[in-house]
Length: 203
Image (cartoon, rainbow, N blue to C red):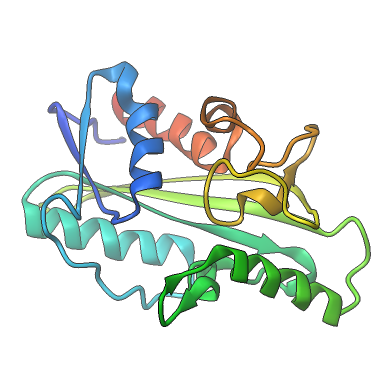
C-alpha cells in the first residue's frame, strides 16, 4: 500500500530554481510549502546510475537522510528515438560548460547529432520524468510520467527551461518553450508523474 505524506513542508531535492517553482505550483493546492536542497545547504550527490529512477532515488534518499525530512526528487530528461534514447539521463550533462550549464549548446548538440545520423522527420522524442518521494527511514514511493512529441529546429520560445524550446508535444502547435508555465504544467511529463504522486500520496 502506498505510504501517505503527512506534514506541511516537503523538501525538494534540487538546486534548480525553475524546477522548484514548477513543483511548488503543482503542490500549492494541497497547502504544502516546499523548501529546496539549496535552501537547506545540502550538497548535490553524484548521480551514478544510468536510469532516471536510479538517479532520482539517489537524490531523494540523500536529501531525506541529511535533512531528516520527507524529500522529493525528480530525474528527468529528453529521450530522442533516433539517438537511442540520448541524451536521456545525461540531458543536463550535454549542457555542461566550464562556465555552467548552457542549454542553447545542449539543443545544438542534440540537433547536430540528429543530422549526423541523418534522422528522418518527424524526429520523435519523449520527455521522461521519474519522481521519488523518500522518507528518512528509507522507504520510498516511485511515480513515472512521459509525454511524446518531436524535435523541431530552430528552437521556439523563451518560456520553460532546458530543452523545452525544441520539443513540440503531440497534439499541440506550440513547443514547451512557447507555452506559459500553467499550460505546460497541465500536460508535461512532470505533470503526468505528479498526478500519480498526488493520487498515491497526497489526495
